[in-house]
Length: 69
Figure 1 (cartoon, rainbow, N blue to C red):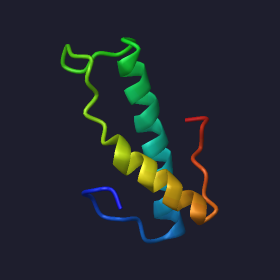
Figure 2: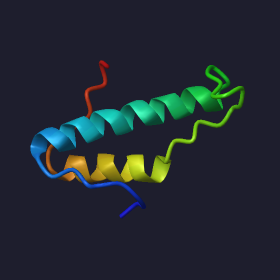
Figure 3: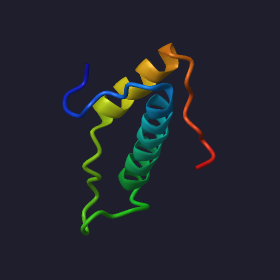
Figure 4: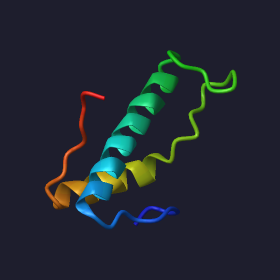
């Protein structure tokens, strides 16, 4: 498991976590391409390992992120 944070418990929480993880990975990509600066820096602070873990675990439960956020 990726470090930190409380793990989702219900299907609803897994959906919310998957949606959030997907959004954060998209944000991180935008920062890497220089499209978004965070505090004037090209570093997002996104815990990509945790986001990827959440998406993998959600998928095991039949949950996919809403990509139309």
